[in-house]
Length: 117
Ligand SMILES: [Zn+2]
Image (cartoon, rainbow, N blue to C red; front, side, top):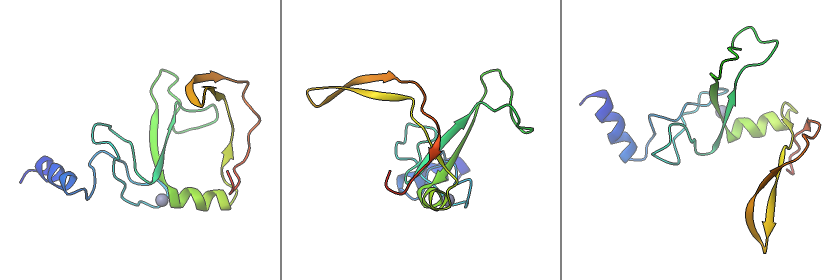
């Protein structure tokens, strides 16, 4: 069986997806929650960066970006070790208990992400 057919076969068995990246921190194998997405990991978060001033590894400043996954377990551990900031840059527009959209708000100052959030 070719590698591609094995990947499809494993996807059908729901063992893993070929398209979800492993956790960057611990290497845990992650799966896609939607088969039609390239990288929508279950029990994990996906992060993107276009680079940043100060890095020596990636800052193309031309629209290219990197995407990584970190599993929920590693995120909880990072939060407990006070290694994650939380911020906010939009709020939901609600009418009659329904979400009608979202609107940008002034970016709030970053602060440590707490266990109860
Ligand atoms: Zn992990």
